[in-house]
Amino acid sequence: MIRAQGFYGVVMTFHDSAYRSDNPFDVPGSSGPSATVQADPAEVGSVRTSYAPDRDGDPDPGEIVWTWVPFEEDDGRGKDRPVLVVAREEAGTLLAVQLSSKQHDRDHEWVALGAGPWDSSGRPSWADLDRVLRVHEDGMRREACALDRERFDRVVERLRERYGWS
Image (cartoon, rainbow, N blue to C red; front, side, top):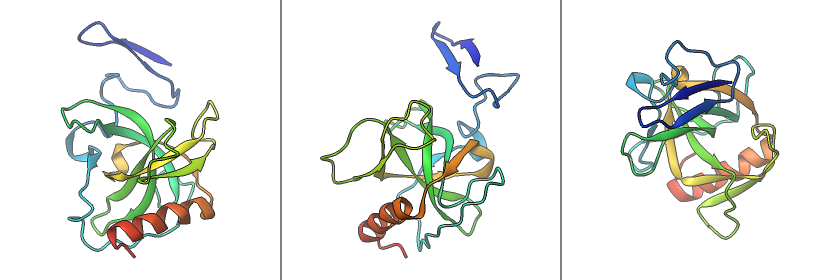
């Protein structure tokens, strides 16, 4: 665990012992060319989703990975969170949807995933169909696990219905 005091005296804690940096604020995916950014599904072009998890340390479609995710306000702030990778783009970047442990049973733009090893507290998670993110391999902090095919297909089917992806 890394603890660091921020600019305004806020103490930040990094729980993943595998993540090390001389600068604890240099979080993968938070800035620069490997920054995780929100992608407009209408502008990403043709998307071919696939299920291809491979425990090789790189993010692959079908895997839940941890990366820095910008807040919806797009004001430079964000937080480290799990995302489900759903497609690889021709440029080598990946498209993902953010996960949340906040309950969204009645929200139509969320897909219930249930619990899994990506959440150390065992809380159920939901995938946000409205938050499509572009993730770079260098912006991923860690690979959490492969989501089983049934739950992955449930998310992808909803994305196909919503955005016309194949």
